Length: 470
Image 1 (cartoon, rainbow, N blue to C red):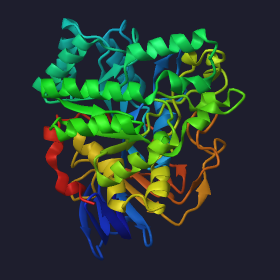
Image 2: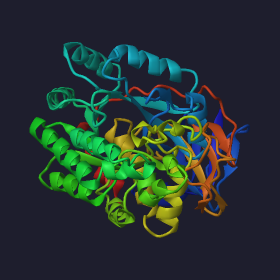
Image 3: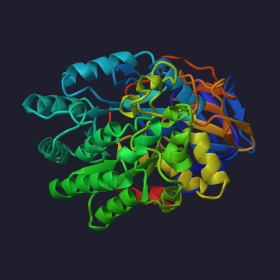
């Protein structure tokens, strides 16, 4: 099976050129002008369109237990929604609770995904407690190619780790050469503020943000960075949401701490006023860290454009408003956290980044694809249009105009956090390892094509800054 994509503008993290891309089997075999192809080759005319490497979402929750319920997407619906939006690889946060067996959790998550994902996937291994058994399992899973861990400095007693456990996790990560991703807050401060607010009768979703204010996140970020610094490990701050936390992370980077930074689309585009909407409507916008004051958005965009924020993810966590978010009526601590975004990330980042003048095309590709591939051991197999790379390709139509709606989305959830928001482009064709999976907003691919990606430890965050220029 072969595929020829003609006359598109190929955009990588460090380059742009108009050329053809020829795919044989699952990989890109040739790039050049006026390529010839044998009879029977499928030809896609990409004139006037961009040809991007498949986008990578490094932070999603497809299956997530939370507050006695579970996310609504399956790996079938979540992966197909990802592809419709141009994401061809996702890394799922595997997060068993402190009371669950880690290896059993890993086997459960992989069994749920196997044969049901339409695009390729991998896992960050959630470390929610650390003992001798945990260490043995982590060593085994790293040997199997799961080369990143995830820790929570929040959700005390359920997902959260102690400082001793954090130190041991980072020490092992340093030894094994893997990256540790961290949800950075101060769990004790959150717990105390929650109790105070509830005791004062402040139980609506509008009180979620005051229970986890900016300084709490900044404190958690500085705390994590200190542990990364003293263990010599590689750290990755997930869903950084505000300027004080950004300042803490950048101060650590200036000291030479090996710390990468992720932001998520909701924090770039939405603000805390959404969670303050009346009639419990604000519950749709409860996530942690919370949506912040709008003044934080410009510093995040500026840092993203400058390349000091590395990646843009989603923290996709699809809980229905009816029956799930409603569990927290009268007590915001019981609202399942998350805003479903896996389908909309690329279009929103293109529209409000590239189209509105905040990001170059190259920086857009870097933040939404290439840097994640480099940081998490997938580059150059993923994250680049190059000979020998997997043929995960997005032919993107910048002339498309539309709006986001829950009525038309592929995500299996009963609302959209971006209802009515306009978009300036969308994928017209998406391929997964050379096979067409999406045409003009409709999934047309193999629902079981996705593979579990076994990764190599990333060396010094790959150090490939020359590939991220722009």
